[in-house]
Amino acid sequence: MRLFNTLTRTVEPLVPLDPAGKRLSLYVCGPTIYNYGHIGNFRTYVAVDLLRRALKHFGYEVEHVMQFTDVDDKTIRGSREKNLPLGEFTAIYRQAFLEDARTLNIDLPKPENLPNATDHIPAMIALIGKLIDKKSAYVSDDGSVYFRIASFPKYGCLCHLDLGNLISGARVNQDEYEKEGIGDFVLWKKWAAADGGVGWDSPWGRGRPGWHIECSALSMEHLGPQIDLHAGGADLRFPHHENEIAQSEAATGLPFVRHWFHVEHLLVDGQKMSKSLGNMHTVRDVLDRGYTGRELRYALLSGANYAKNLNFTWQGMDDAKTALARIDEWKKRLSVWLATIPPDPSYIVPPNLEKELSEAINESLAHDLNVNAVLGHLFTWIRTCHREIDENPSRFGYGKAKAYLSAWEKLDSILGLGDAVVAIPAEIQVLLDQRTEARKTKNFSLSDELRKKIEALGWKVKDTAKGQELLPG
Image (cartoon, rainbow, N blue to C red):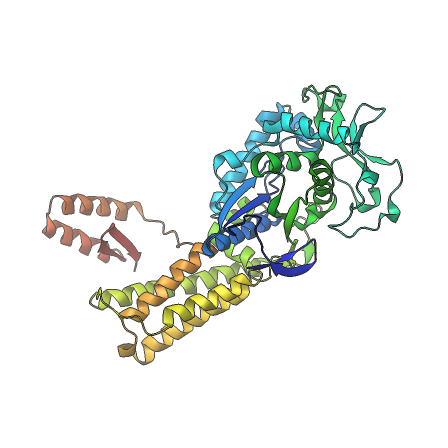
């Protein structure tokens, strides 16, 4: 598998630290939980989900960790504005993020690998202490602790910065800043009145961690001193990820990350998202306009490789709806087609068909997650199947239909598009429940009568090994 590595700026093989080449550690910078996530944030998490699913498809065991930033300038400011304790305030947006992720069918890490930053304050204090001992950090005259950039000659390696702009002795106390602000960055911020009740005791006095130290401490505690893959949005390259490298490698003396996976920006109608332009949409905003999470996931996956900017438009959402309808119609036609052919447990798949379908997908995925090529293969399958069934149905047998459906199932385990969710009218649900009871009691005449009533209302019911399957019209 080959991925673009931000550190080297090349597409290169993914080589795990694991000597057996099977286990991969993946650390993802999670959201700062001070507001609802916008669709630009979720472009990153959908792309990371695609990556994790692809790694699993190729046989890797992925140890996946993602943190929630629940203490920083933004969360403290937001909690004070809402007059809520920090933990109560951030819990609202943590839950909202988890709900939005489910809407987009994003597989998140196991619960113990989804920590809040504030769960690991002792680990951050210990890491800062280690940096002070190594002379890579110092306590300033204002009582805060700063990382000494001059102690780390590699600083700027990720973003290829010109350190000619570095002002000796300059300090940056805020969590986020521009490149022009290059200077010693804060690791521990001395308590200030603006922090209110937020603060922890440390050897340097009461205060709170800076944003950057959080991810280094959390990733080391969960995954060890070195990581195979570190993922996040392109906006995190500087200063956040640059600072992570500096503080982590200064503390351990080891290369921090082998492969940096950055997802580029989501534009809206060709413009950068901003509140002033009124184009900063949340997942909930998209749903309110009548679209589904499945359609939004498709739109965020397609259109551009993760390492390039993606332009979001409402026409693009309509195109996603149309594309998914084509896929659903094709799957339905193959399922119906299979139902008309007597099942044959000994069917022979046409020579090499399964292999051809799998190889086409694998080659595209393995080369930097080329989703557009994958979707191109998928829609070629769809056109081929429709044409063959229309022109020469006798040649489109049980084995071929099964091969295509099997290939789709493997592909969708990676794409995560799932099936269309059909809203079942209450009247139909009542008839289905009655029919379930009739079949349990072997009252097949009543079961047939209920089937006819369901069909008269424009629905079809199919009996399968898993129970009744309801299909529109």
